[in-house]
Image 1: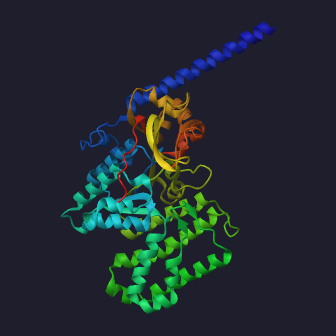
Image 2: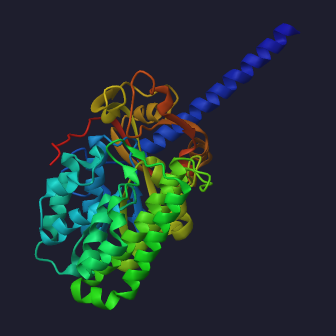
Image 3: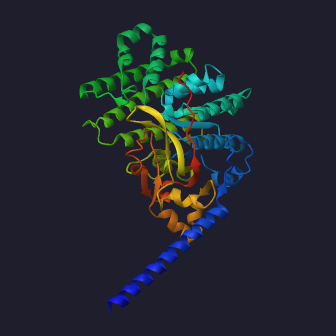
Length: 443
């Protein structure tokens, strides 16, 4: 009897294994036949490959492109190429990046008016992740694209993050001084001493409750003062500048609340990630509202932010999905092996890290076996095609993601997340072998 039970168990295992193998082969064949193989010449403006996904992207107000690491050249170059396509073929005019709202206005001023220097403006975003030749190439392209065009046809560069409040403080203080330097000195000079986020130490200042209350009161008073003096401000600044001034006050309030959450103050009941992503979503919505009902935007941020569900917290993408429904389309990035830049906590420097093939059974491992080196797949469409595809994309599967920091000695296993890809993304771009970004010297 024991022998028969063993034979029966083995038979069940073989049947199950065979069914899984057949299902995997079905998914692999679908990708080989239906995924859009993307041009690996990232500088190409021959968009015959991207034209195949135009219908998929039609009717979306926000197309969000993620990245599985902050330091991968292929991800940045592909996103720049997709942005060129969206601008030239689908009427997109707005670009938004996971960087400080106020600091990005310096970049936007260069793009719109040619004022300043591109490298200096990008360096002003502070984080090394954007100080790359790929971002520089995109900024220069945007500037060239705008040349000679009327304002309503120009592309714009926005940030939607509230971290690094220094730019908001300086721009706000400059306008308040110009409005009335004596009144500023007597009532608002304290704003210049604020340091909510210490970007040299990469930490939020731990304020006492009384200090937090004082900062909040100060910002409310500044907001009331700006609102009461709009007529005078209108004689000094454009409508855009006044709107951005009011937004700077909001950004400082957002940054303060994120700092409270980061320091786990009793006045905060949610996580830092929750606060940050909530406000990044609000800033994206503010930009779209300000630019008008016909405005469309491409977002650039990490996979963890753009995903439409949120892994452990409500992500930027989850908020935007709720607000915009099918008008929000999230494209995640995945890879198998290769190099990327990341901050090494041991040496406190940015280093090139190289990883080998993704772990067996992971999405990176599976996609690499399709033989298509770089491709896009519409997950939404795939899950409606047949049961094998639905099972594959809705089951938990390990996929590799790295944030700004990476320690090769400890973080390899920590960089895998076990989640259904369909829950996270509407579509996905896969790159089999990646190269690291090239950083230019800080200006």
